[in-house]
Image 1 (cartoon, rainbow, N blue to C red):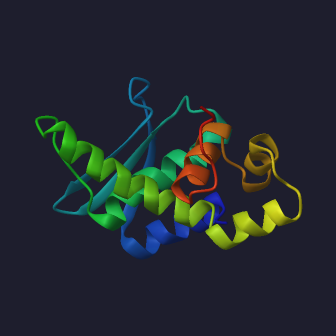
Image 2: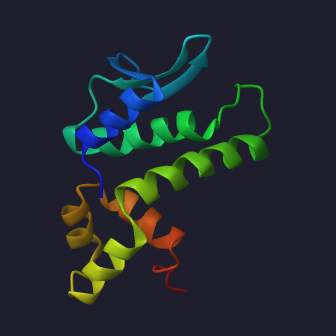
Length: 136
């Protein structure tokens, strides 16, 4: 499980700049240019979401998972998946998640509190690891 400070250390190592900007429509964005990768997090982002939004955008940078607005939906979804995968694996390592479940920290709410992420992100992580299935 990584803290926001550890994510910033990854950015320093990978030459990724992170700035808080005004982008309420998308919440966060990553761009790749001649000087490297830049991440923008909306300055109005609730504190509890900064870490997971930063991790997702850093995932785009680290994995080179970029697309333009004219890309096909299939291509966009593949790049978003790669960024999500990186964010999940960095913020919620499978071994740590399983360990918490074995300790009876087994509700989405409690797990999200433990890992410092939103409940939606925790559900996404549990689905990614095959530990959560929708009823039905």
